Length: 190
Image 1: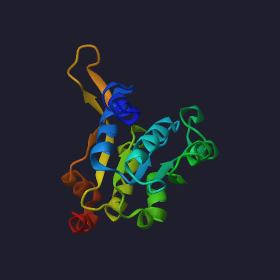
Image 2: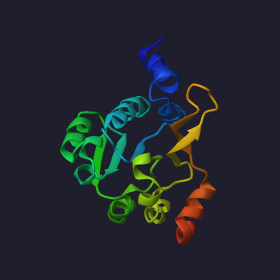
Image 3: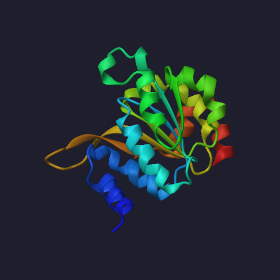
Image 4: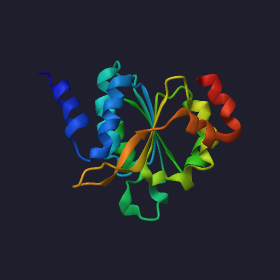
């Protein structure tokens, strides 16, 4: 068995946190070339994601954009600084862009340059309140196969861990609902 296959099995079915497993299965299935992540956190998820996703695209063709408060966080211990995130991610074979700020202000400046994004991740760090205004910009970033995964609190039904955080695919109808008046852009992309 090749190392890539073993790495995939580990990340997609055995790794911790368990809620990220769907993320890695989706990356392999959809051959992701561009990622926008809301909520970089400590950057470890971004590192794993980039290292894994670049196996499926030619060298240097993976682009990753991270939107985060960085130093603007209330609790600086819950994440990394912009400088640290840039230092850790730039060593990976991908085009890295880090945008400091709230989702709304970041997308107001950069949504048009993020058109055609393959995968959009919305971590629990950027919950409903932080994303409310930003949804109006997301349709500009979508294409017909864009996958949007949001980190949600779910019930697993298992006795040991009945509730957990997990990435869940967002239905296009929900995107239209949240985008409101910009829904016509989604219709064009779909």
